[in-house]
Image (cartoon, rainbow over all chains, first blue to last red):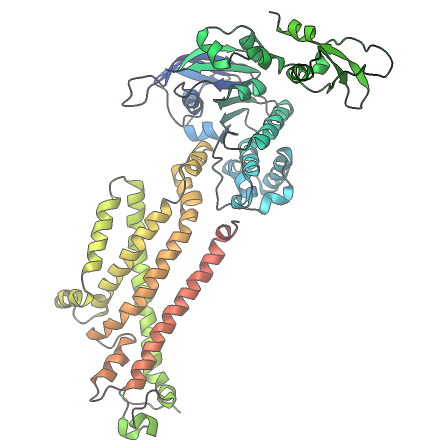
Length: 322
Length: 237
C-alpha cells in the first residue's frame, strides 16, 4: 500500500479566457497526507476548477500546487495523471471495455505484468464491493451504483497516493448514495489515501470530510477546518448561511451515542419505559426521537441488545457547548 | 456440359427454352456459368472491393483530419455531398478522354461514391465517445494517440461498419454501369442481352439476380463482422 500524499495549494489563481471573474482567487490550502478533504460551496465557487488544476486537466495562472513538496508542473501531465486517481459524477467508464479492462487501464499503461493486473483487478472489485465475476460484464449491464463502484476501483487501480473525486455520488438515488458514502469512508480508513472530494451538498461534506474547505463565489476560501469546528464557529455570515440554521443538529450528527459518557441505567434490565436507540446511532437521531416521543431521555442499547445506559437532553446540550 | 465459345448465346443452337426466349432458362445458366456469369461476378467483386477499399482509405484519412483539426469537417462534408450529385455517366464522359475505356475511369466515380457514404459515418463514429469518457481517459494519463487507438476508434466501429454496409451495397449496384465502358462486371452480360434484336431475358435476370445476391452476401458478412467486433453493443439491457 503506497503512502498518502500531502497536497498544498499555494495562492493558486485561475481565470478562464473571456471571463471577468476569477474561477479561483488566491486559494491557499494545506491538506495533510491521509486527510479526507471536502471542497464545498455554491456553484461559481471554483471547487471543480481547484480539483482539475491538481491533475492539470486545466492549468492555473498564478501560484503553485505541490504534491509531497513537488510542483505539479515538474512532471509531464501524462505521468502526473497516472499517479492520481480521478472519479467524476458521470463515471466515464469505457463502454466498449469490460469491467475488468476498465479497472486495468492504468496498470496496463504502467506496463504491469498480466498476472499482477489480473490479481489486482480481482482485489479491487472485492474492495469496492463488487463480485469478481462482474469483471467480464460491460458497463451497460450495470446499475448506476455499480458503475460508480467500478469508477472508484479504476481510480484506485495503480494505488495512487491521491484521489480526486468530483461529485461522485451526485447522480445516485439517496439510498445508494448513503451506502456508497459509508463504504467510501470505510475504504478511506482501510487504504489511507489523501482524498480531495468536491460536492455542493453540505450534508455530504459534513458526513464525509475530516476537513472541509468552504469556497465562495469568485473562488476564494471562506473557511477551512474540521466539520465540528466549522459548525461550532462559522467564520462569517456567508459560512453561517451556507451551513444552515440547523447547524446545531448537524453537529449532533457528528457524534455517535455510544461515544458519549452515558448515565447508568435506573435499575435492573428494565428501560423504565424509555424510547430505545442503538449505540451506533447519532446523537442527532436520539434527540429527534426525544422530540418525537416528548421524553427528555432515551435508553441506549448495544448491538447485542444489552443496555448501555441513558442519554439525556443535557448530554446533547453539553456536546454543543463551545 | 460447358459450351465454350462466344459469350452471346447463339439462339439457333440453344434449347427450346433458349430459342423461344422463355422467362428463365436454367439450362442456359448452367451452360454459360463458366464462360459468362462467373467471370463477370468475379470481375464485379473486384470492382467493388477496389472502390470500397480505396474509398475507405481516403474517407478514413479525411475523417481523422476533420476529427483532429477543427473547421475541416464541414467543408469536406459539403465537397463530398457535391460529388454525390454528379451523375456517374457524366463523370465517365469527363474521364474517358483522360483515362480511356479503362478500369481507372470506372473506379474513380465508384471510389467517389463510396467515399461520400463512408466519410460522414467514420467521422460520426470518431465523435461517438462522450465528453465524460474522453475526460476520464485524459485524467488517467492516456496520451492523445492512446485515446484515439484505445477509446475513440473502438467506439467508432459500429458507425464505421454501418457506413461500410451502405457503401458496399450501393457500390455493388452502381458497379453494373461499368459495362458502359467495356467488358466489366455483371453489367456486361446485361448490356449484351439488351443488345439482342429481342433482349434475352434469362441472361438479364441471371446477372441481375447475381448483383442482388452479391449485395446481400456482402451485407451479411458485414453484419456478422459487427457482431464479432462489437460485443459490447449487444450487452445493453
